[in-house]
Length: 227
Image 1 (spheres, helix red, strand yellow):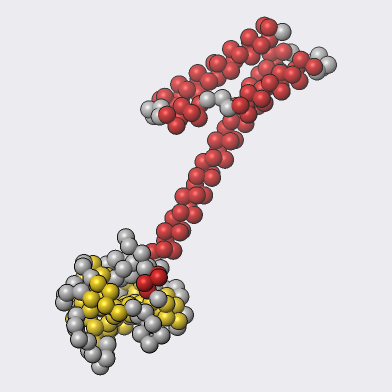
Image 2 (tube, rainbow, N blue to C red; image 1 turned 180 degrees about the vertical axis):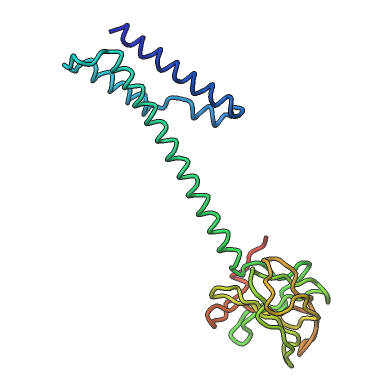
């Protein structure tokens, strides 16, 4: 029985050396990769169970060497299957992360001012927007990716731009001094689309900013995040 265990031990050692050598050819072994080469408790328990089966079986038509070879082959196959399963899980998580990032790209949660500002008026039922007081000519950026839906001049709001974010959201930017994007142009999140101004019914340069979701006005101050 000692010879049987020694033979099994030698086979496992040779297999691990071969696995290590192959991985060494492919890339420099990192700490994480070394960890992957270690025999886990699960596999040790698995081989131990198989040895016990060999010791207690009454079959005589299979030699000890064949049984040991089967144990090792099953062990290596299980290790390969687990490795493939881990790779699939990593790919799935990467795909989920990619989808999440793509979705967030079109959510208008970016502060629309690229520069110094102060909140001059907050959201209320009478004023469903957030006003950013900033120097005339300060860059206004898209709060999310989308298409410039319209650019127009209003008696009260002055020069206005509306961006459709291709989902349930749209944003409105008002009192602009100038716009740098034409209608039907796709803009990225954080891209400069206009300049702060004092047009329309305005007492000082500022950006009047609205977030609309399904025709409902949201409080931008609770919605926006710094990036």
